[in-house]
Amino acid sequence: MISPVHGRAAGSLFGLAYGDALGRPAEFLTVTEIEERYGPTGPRDLVGDPALVTDDTQMALAVGWALHDAPAYTPEAVEPLLRQRFLAWAASPDNNRAPGMTCLRACAELSGGLPWQQVTQAGSKGCGANMRVTPVGLLDVDLDTFAGLAQLQAGLTHGHPTGLAASELTAYAVRLLAEGTAIAELPGLLAARARDQRRTYRADWLGDLWQRPGVRTPQEFIARGWDECLRALARLDAAIAAPDDGGDPCRLTGEGWIAEEALATALYCAVRHVDDPVGALARGARTAGDSDSIAALAGAFVGAAVGAAAWPADWAGRIEYADQLTALAAAWQR
Image: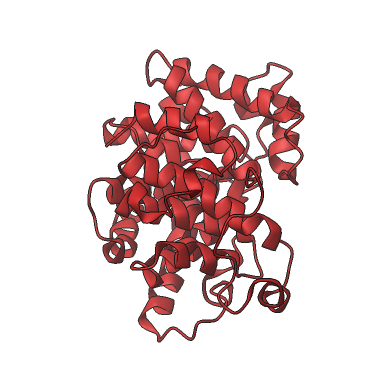
């Protein structure tokens, strides 16, 4: 029997897992196929005992436990723990949920013990960079440490500057919501953060990751990522400003396979369904794109805003990894 944990940290962590579980069977289906299976509103209840999640939740837990066990929030203390947790995930028999190839390739390279900057998938900005970053947003740390942690956990596998920037923005959204910011205010605040950080390269956390052909300075490297995120947020603003036709948000903000689109499309679902938390998950799952990642991030956002009360009371005992989610939520309870 899982003891309930209340508050925003629990709401966000469990919301991530709930969205992941609802989106898991919908991934790789068309919207028409999803509606034929679940009805016009998409999946709205957990299925299975337990309800299984994907690598999104598994890797979020890996990040969460690395942070939980870190003796200090410094790159020297956290990087080995992240590497250890990622490698354990890669070797686990439970890693059988159609994991992302970028994460698998990066973990195979990380196992050799080389500096992570040499083995990260430098060209990848897949949503694996930010589907797992929610735990960073729940930490009570200063903004510089927060930003370093968000980018470091992304960089171990996804070395593209947009993966780094989108991960920081995803965690920043969770942080702001857990502090009481209204969901409707998020797009503007995230855009302001992106503009403010546009030429900030965190060398103490990233080392020489920026050095690659065609890039002249670390500032030029990281600005490319922030600029792509700003373009995704501009599409989000335009989508929110227009009437909601109830259709697939991927048409407006992208399919979510890449990091900045996963952020924007999940935010769209959260903003449109701020008064219907389960509806936000269902909207994310009822998409033609990366349904589990979009729904997972939407759940992390709505749960951080509303708390554990956002979710049906019986779901906590039905979701896979409930014990781990509960333990982390209790450690970071707000």
